[in-house]
Amino acid sequence: MDLAKRGFGVLSPLTEHESFDLVAYRRGRFWGVQVKYRAAVDGGIELRFKTFWADRKGVHGVAMDKTTVDVVCVYCPDSDACYYVNPRKFGETARLRLHPTKNGQGKNVLWAKDYRVFPPVR
Image 1 (cartoon, rainbow, N blue to C red):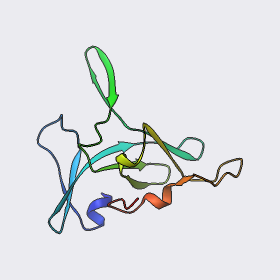
Image 2: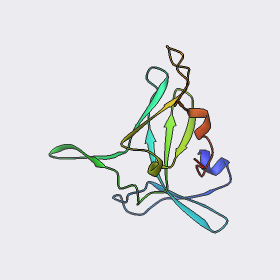
Image 3: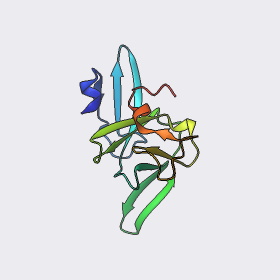
């Protein structure tokens, strides 16, 4: 686990329906972390700030309550890395770029490598 390698204690909730998936702890501070798994598509990682669950009536999704988590951790298997995002800094979606765009656009690009720091400083 990336956070443990960085020297954080990692705590799991005992219940299944919390707004966070784990809690990171270090030096007297706790961070609620929601974890997502996203494969790269067209050189980027698409983040939707929504929460999904399934029950006998199907799959459901609602907008994330961004006040209940401190950090969204996105694991991308294509880069084998975790990226840490402060969800309150974004609207409904964000796209982290792993590779340059095909048209060479660089302005307003969110480079995934800039989101490897925990806790996010952006």
